[in-house]
Image 1 (tube, helix red, strand yellow):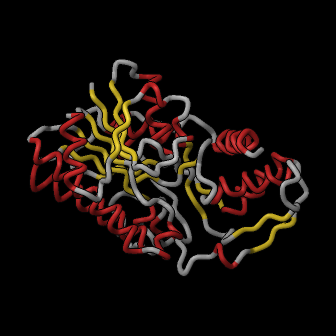
Image 2 (cartoon, one colour):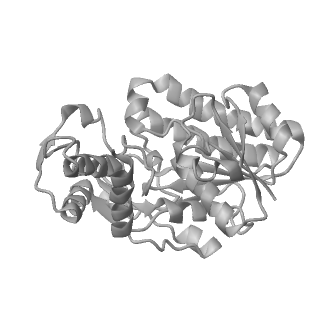
Length: 320
């Protein structure tokens, strides 16, 4: 089996590659990267996968990679994935996420091949969710509250349209928040963990800078999430359909912060940083993954407390 992971050097992409290497050693793994991609996420597995330079925003570049690989499975994870950046550069988020995916689809169509394709959509698409709509099912209205979320709605519906119009075997996974080792330090839980480790090591004063602590999020360990990505293409999910991947438990960001501080045992002062507040924020994301579980048998297995501990240990190893 030939597997293509777009964005293999990223957080989820690197974990997916590790999962496939461990659980499906007969698979041949190819991954796209850009010339400026940071390589530290795949430093332990780089020799075991085949890296191909590609700018997904360029159709000819994408076609060359697709012809070179001729994949049986495509996991499209490459994206501009940081919500705050989409406020500062909305056009880049829309172009990277929507046009990049469009080029993947067009490259597949040009080859006349029939791979299974998973597209990594997002719970951010649901946006403004009301308490009487919880937990969120796939049928919930999409009310996006950021340019990033709008770009993901575009990807999501483009996947549906290309399945219906051209018969591409596309599975739309709507992943809720996922954390774990190697999570970028711009993301809230990992940022908290890194700040705590810097305090532990005397690299910064015992002050934690935070944004909105009242938001509620449904967290899954990234290692469970990428296992779900793999299962989504095993043939039991219906092409064109959307599937939530989530734990079904929500945490206030305040609770995440409190757990990390307790795990560390540090005494810290917590200060709100206006720069960390968004023009509009999604108040609550709590998902229902029963549709995906019924199709695949997937269940999250790693407790979030373990995820937080592993993030702390990751930063303890990374911060000099």
